[in-house]
Amino acid sequence: MKRRTWYLAVSWSLLLWSTAAQAADPSGYGQAGGEFDIKIPRVPAAELPAAKADKPPFAPTPEILAEGKAIFLGRGTCFQCHGSEGKGDGGAAKVLPIQPRNFTNPAFNKVRTPGEMMWVLKNGSMGQSGKVPGTGMLPIVGQFLSEEDGWKVLLYERSLGESR
Image 1: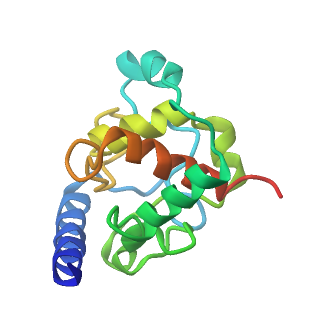
Image 2 (image 1 turned 45 degrees about the vertical axis):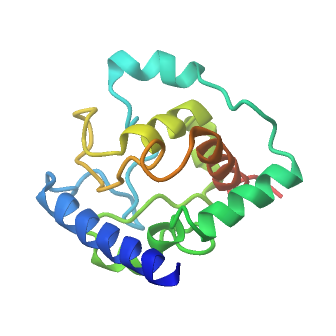
């Protein structure tokens, strides 16, 4: 199992790097930390209203958040790019020209809805909106995770940016 996880992480890293490297120059889009401007949607305009309206099928209870964290740090391999604390500083982030999303940024939850995050988990973020170059984020829901697991992991990610 560990070999499969390592292989998946390395494969993702290489694919993410090659895809992001071919994307448009991100200069002007990033903020000081290299993260894309959180106010620019990743969802194409025609799909944005439906994505914003999409809601998680369950509440972010401690049990759901614990399951989401386990997925984030385990079979979801989210930590490879987003880092073990969700700051966008994972090992694979070092080879990407664009820093992965920092989920600890409390402003992110104010401008991005759970439905928009689910859209990215289902479709990836390869520059479909035309407003930002592709980040290399691959679609994982439907490929590697179920939709239910996707909701759990994104609720966990959102919990990282909650004001304490």
